[in-house]
Image (tube, rainbow, N blue to C red; front, side, top):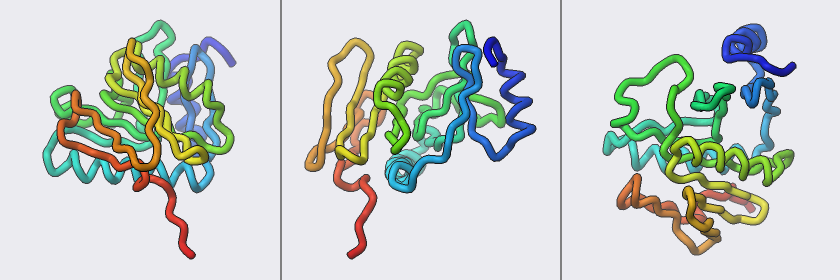
Length: 183
């Protein structure tokens, strides 16, 4: 199945509502459910981000089902695990795919993900206007922070993620995002 369009994706999603899909270079990519750890980490990032953004009315924090129509020739539809769109860029929500890229995006590596593919996805978003992309790896307890044409920054436990160009004052202590252990 290649050379498929957004309409094809929408048709497949209507026929198979329980499947998450992306449209990449004219091909439908079926997204398998992630393991518990990566989902728990993604939810924690989204919760901490939302709890800071929403009371300040700074934007929209979205989860892994929010699709973005990329401005490339194939009109790819991609869905980061967590994303933020600043309020001034999308003052009203839509039931359709967002026809813009998020300002901030996170990809949380799951057991079946390939790091190289996640890095490529982040780079694609950066090239289309995303300001900051973050690759989160729960197994190594690291965050790789990407900005276009800037060397990546690697954060670990004890470090704090800050994104002053988008969210001055917001801080995300790295050790707070990992899945807890209950002994």
